Amino acid sequence: MKTLQTATLLTATLTTGLMAGLFAAFAYAVMPGLGRSSDQAMVEAMQNINKAIVNPFFMLLFMGSLPLLGLAVFLAWKGHGRPALPWLVAALVLYLIAFVVTSGVNVPLNDKLAKAGDPPHMKDLGAVRQEFESAWVTWNAVRALLHTAAFACLVWALVVYGAHRLHESDTAGPAGYRTHGPALANSYHQPSPEQPWIAGPRG
Image 1 (cartoon, rainbow, N blue to C red):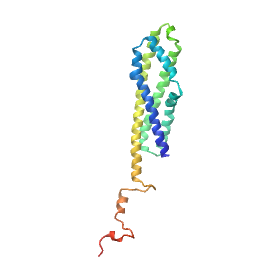
Image 2: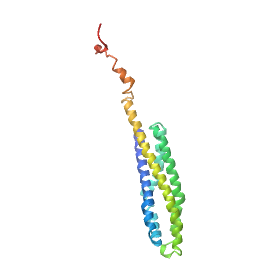
Image 3: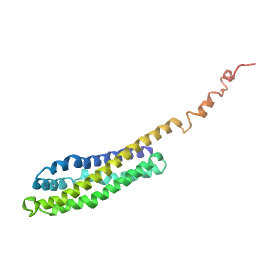
């Protein structure tokens, strides 16, 4: 079970980090670059990007993070690495909010832009761009921040979980017995039958 939890937590952190990086790259590089382009170039580029991004790899990362996060929360709640549970719950909530932003705002804007037709044949290309660009850029920045915050929570959950696992390994032997502390300290003062001389000076 602990191996499953570790693998789930690592995978969820990786997929969430990749999504955060993708949306952040659009926020600080892609959209500012397209913002300097002509109306036709900007609209045509976004139409092509929106078509290309709907691929199995993106969908696996975007959709797959949610069940991974849910499983990580469940495993932590069951008692394995419970100190990391609050951070996992926070990551799940943040990711869910970002998911709603994408599906409720950015995707409808993408669909509306696609239905506007080919840029060379649009009647008012500037108006189409303005209606799409300002809202899309704003909400992309919101979801980028949400995904980044979720990623940060997962990274810290990994730290907390790792520290908890290390503490467990330090305080329990192979069979679950304590290996340090009072129990171990007392063992040094208990003479064994084979070594009666360590009990103290004979009188």
